[in-house]
Image 1 (spheres, rainbow, N blue to C red):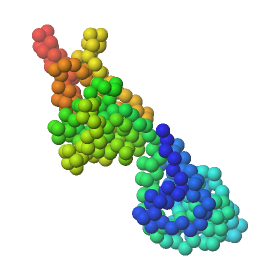
Image 2: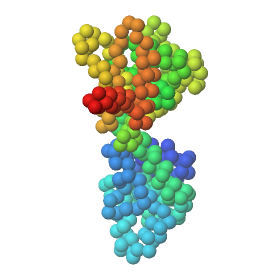
Image 3: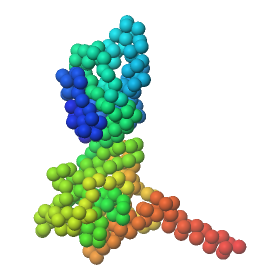
Image 4: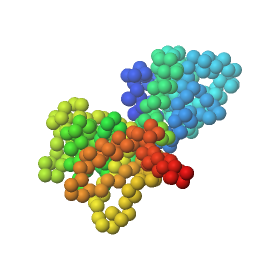
Amino acid sequence: MNPILTANDLFDAQQDALRLQWLAGKSGQDRLLEPATARFPGMALVGYLNFVHPNRVQVLGSAEVEYLRRLPDSEHAQAIQNLFTCATTTIVVVANDETVDPDLAQAADAAGLPLLVSPLPGPKVIDHLQHYLTRSLAARATLHGVYLEVMGLGVFLTGESGIGKSELALELLSRGHRLIADDAVEFSRTAPTVLIGRCPHLLRDFLEVRGLGILNVRAMFGDTAVRPEKTLRLIVRLEQLTAERMTKVDRLQAEQITRNILDVDIPEVVLYVAPGRNLAVLVEAATRNHILRMRGVNPLEELMERQHVLMSRKEK
């Protein structure tokens, strides 16, 4: 699912932070900022005036405004026309509290392209807009499961309906971990290898447990028991333990399995549900083990190295 963002959405979201004023081109308030540009955060999204590779949001600072003013009349008119008729440009922002020439405003109204002004320096305007657009236009996916912060890491519990994800989440909450989202988790890719998971506003703070109904986690466990969002680090998939699956279990976990979400590979651990198995402890152990892997510690490699040393001694 790709979000839709209009020029008016950007103005409403950044009006206070950047002290924006809508000077001209108000008929273009529904112009779209295309989600595809968010896949390349440094490319054609926000930047200073560029006629060769036009940005989606063209920012005019002091140097750019002065450059346009110094152009001969014929070149000046052509530059203004190129700026406001470019098919890839959605918004023009004049920063540094620069005075806007009347021909800029006229061209914006004629083309129906929003012309905004801000008293803040150009670099700050670009930084704010780059961050906002990258997050707002990031590729997104909504997945079924429970998302928690376990030992400081974002852990996504998944599995078929009714397998016990919410009950496991409740047990983890009682052990001091934190809930981010239950049932529907919104993931967005904010960087090439970064997925941020958050809860839809409607479901925030709620956990549904069969037999108990809807629980308000914030009211039950306090404000520290919930988080608004977290970077996804580990997926824990719950599966019923059957005789057939038992024969296929890789007891040594020689290969790290991953799951691809929005073109990002996330490490995945499979935990089997069976009577007598303490899943909360297993999730904590899986999280601790993943933290060690991130630090370069691999118990299997250590075991194999010890075995190799022992066999070498026996051969001598």
